[in-house]
Image (cartoon, rainbow, N blue to C red; front, top):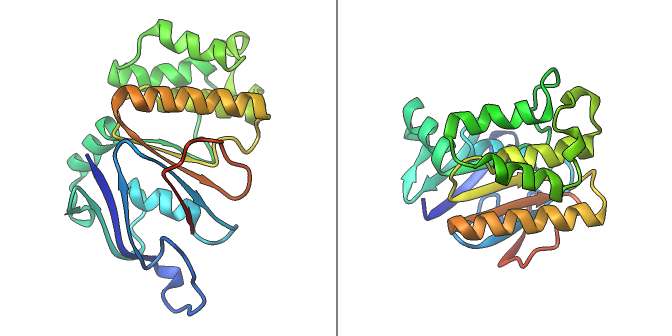
Length: 214
């Protein structure tokens, strides 16, 4: 996948509003593979909706979302499965981890499906992010910031053309935020992929090709 395009896309809940001023909603926007984007938003402007629309998790919007020129509203379940497995990685704001499983078990669930990352690389990321001692700790016993770091590792355990990260550092200190940014950009560069990050305030300091206000 080389391009994600939004053509006059607008959440259904905003259709009857006249006060929507946005660089994204109801505009023509293109995200290109290999580039890094920041989508800044205020609470309630549809940031999480944007993530869900692009991932095919929700469809309550007007307009079009195109992957390489093809309208995703016509995608079959099989096509969405392929997209999520090979082309689009997502780090959800709410993380969506399994609290009863350990950090490594949560990562392994993804990596065993894809067989994409070597165990050595995964352990290296745990070490870089300062959570090596948490690998065998149940997620439900970890802080949200620690869980965010595990969720990033899990999101990278697949091939992707675009990495979508929704408020990935909301609970991280600057040092770990910088490390997370470095890991993301290095892996994206290795795959020739793009990054789309969202923020309602604190964001990763990356070399963004464009900053959009939602």
